[in-house]
Image (cartoon, rainbow, N blue to C red; front, side, top):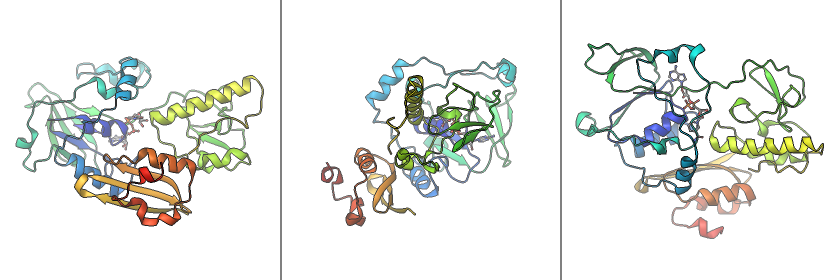
Length: 332
Ligand SMILES: NC(=O)C1=CN([C@@H]2O[C@H](COP(=O)(O)OP(=O)(O)OC[C@H]3O[C@@H](n4cnc5c(N)ncnc54)[C@H](O)[C@@H]3O)[C@@H](O)[C@H]2O)C=CC1
């Protein structure tokens, strides 16, 4: 049983093989933190519904990162009830990128023979856990009752229902103009300084809306492609940026030359059911602003470059998504 519909739940669902999984989500579609209903349905139908093994493309770099980080993952069993006592919970760093590479999430069940619909994943939408019973007399290790009235027996429950940042006890007072208010304190999006002198902020703890900032700084043009999602990739970018802000402040220079993050819409999409690819691009005034890519499209680098260099693509129109045209070669 997996509860939650965020980054960890999505990654786990992708990694688990040969195991029947019940996935309880509060929302109406999977992955709602990252995309809307349409790519969500595509992802489910083409990658998860029939238990297709889509995990043959592990990135060597990802593995390398994984080997460098400590194992922060904590697995609790039902006897360790201290985890529910907040005063006894030790505060930890997150488990790190590609944490799942350390584990083999392979069950020993031929789920297709158990589930009559031949689906390894049963999704319960619009619900959450009501109660968990792990009495000795149970047929299963754990019996889970959902808010929608259904009950499932299972061996293991993964609760991936989000994390809280550890900044709540600091009382910041909003003071600065053009600032982002988060959790009652304020961060200046240009300098990343909080309203406490010499305290800077980055990562999940602050919610910087760079693309909405109304400042007069010339660098504002670089902010337009920022769309914050609480992912490792973005935490790294913010960490790098805040480090530069701190360095600049320490030598008391203007921050104009800091290497700021470069990144009415039209959008177009293509689905290619035969090869399980989904591509959606967002164009603004003929320039590429963003894309959703599902499957092995091999388009990520090309599209990233088109977002960064802002070439006017109006003349290509629909052809940009024509699967018979190798746009990677074209824009090389
Ligand atoms: N590749 C990456 O950079 C990754 C980053 N992360 C980050 O690590 C952090 C922790 O990940 P997650 O735990 O997945 O958090 P999350 O914030 O991504 O998702 C939490 C999910 O739990 C749901 N939820 C909340 N309360 C619930 C309840 N009572 N019952 C059922 N569902 C409930 C929410 O609707 C949401 O879908 C997040 O900030 C996440 O973005 C996670 C995985 C990968």
